[in-house]
Image: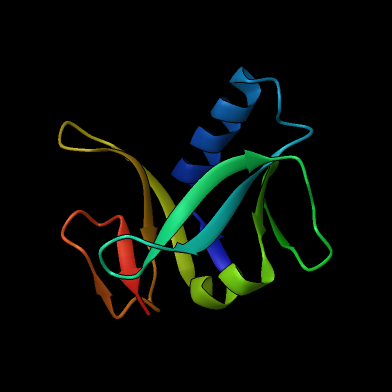
Length: 108
């Protein structure tokens, strides 16, 4: 479904551990309407699992996708970069037909 790089997994684990949520929460990746290209990504920690959620395990970290978002995220890679030029999570989505200049939204 999606791939989580080692760098993203490690960063998520640190963030969840720092908040004391590693055993109870996962990262919810969601696609919602909005942004200049029509769709945008939302990332948040969530302890709720719904009936139609998909769950991917990356080490001790769980990534949760709702059924609708999963359709847009098939084949996506979640990465984390930390360089002098940029720092943060990067989503490489092969289903995105175009993206906005800031990279926060996409069209599929």
